[in-house]
Length: 497
Image (cartoon, rainbow, N blue to C red; front, side):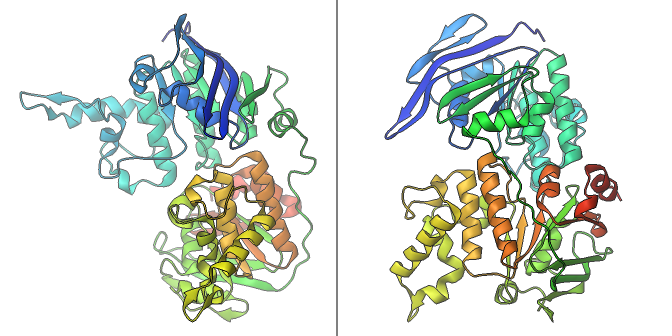
């Protein structure tokens, strides 16, 4: 591939009724260069990417690709010019295999009846999977892939078009540290081949590690650019939000109190031979770390009663919890905020107030009918408590940004005043400002005596937020690190068993 590729956007503006999404935005990138694009949710990053991908046309501005000036692109024109996307929101065709997903629309067919040549498709796809060190093959069913593996599939699909510019939108949001490092190595390999990479991430340590330049958007405008030697976390945060975050993490010392959750010798379907033992104390934030596939989410789902417990018991507030019963878990004061907030945590077509009210319907009802004034009162109280940004709490939850959707999921469960909160990847795919607000909420809950079990693949988050960290490997807790012993190396050593 030639590194002579260049693309620049200048004066790009886009407005919708009542909203200016982009206002005179400029961006440039060349072959063999990694440019980080950062900004809070709502800063205009997604709209700018849609302009680059051809799904929307700007109201004003110019796109120049290899010296050719264009007012806009179509998706076909963008692909023909070598622009490929790795989207944050995964939309694989789960009824197809890996090769069919990667080569969708570009299938290899043979013979007079144009039958698919599956062997040829597998041969075409395998080198890409090898480069990503993907733990699945061309013939594997996509329905069987984990969320992290589907993310790798999305990356493989983008690389398969022989791209000259790869736009990666939060590509590591569901990956562990080891998988993230592997992906960053792939990004470096693309750079060495002369491919331009536009890397969008809320994980600023990744931007700091790989970006040659950083472009910052704020409120739909260029907030500035950072050059080599200037790319530091404090500079990026300051430009993104227009102020410094003096205390990003607000972890406070935790004095050992009585246990609120005890997991004793629990085995799940994912690891039927393993035995997990874990204790969460009142008022602490216990981080649960480990590689993807270690069994963290499965353990949380089993404790909450979604999945069966094959062995062992759950003790909640000093009393044995009825197994395999979500109702018993909720009545006992346990709540679970799932990793997939859109698929499992929210009803996107329901209003924000409806979503918040769902677990609290009995106390919001009179004679079996929900009292709308009570529901709205709860929603407005949640808006103030969590800083939910919405024009109306009657709007559909689908209209909210990722950070505000996460706040709604938290608000929904915290309205029932739990004694134990399990949060699975609580800041996945949300911006740095929203992350700080989520951390503030979690710490405030811990201050009130709520025990929190926080599952996270973000090493910096685990260390910065947790009072202690339990590490899981192959269905078992391999160690628990106290606050004064939390290091990445210590966690990784336990994560690999």
